[in-house]
Amino acid sequence: MSVGITGIHHLKIPVSDLEQSRAWYERVLGLHVRQEFSDGDGVVRGVAGDIGGVPVALRQNPATAAGLSGFDPICFAIADRAAAEGWVDRLDDLGVDHSSVGQGSQGWVVRVQDPDGIEIRLYSTDSPYSG
Image (cartoon, rainbow, N blue to C red; front, side, top):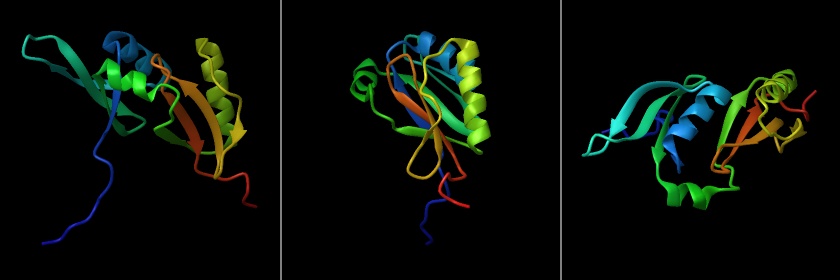
């Protein structure tokens, strides 16, 4: 028997209002929804798809979403400072509040909060500290 981790299967993000969050993640981060999850009464309580090839699920769970408000559990990878600046321009065009481009501990970073106040970071894979 072989054991090991081969990667991330998916990220599950708790949200208080599925419809509002789905629209935000689609519009702002480019979520492509591929599946909806209904409860026993047929009410959709979750969706799954991908953001930039990363499998992501949104799941209605208001208490957990509130508990994560202000926390930064997710950092999506972007290429470099130019990509970070491009995200600032995109977020400006969408009228979405965000940070300026900053230096993180290992790369360039832009911070944005989803409708529940969960901080999503767009973090470069290159570093301002190399070269």
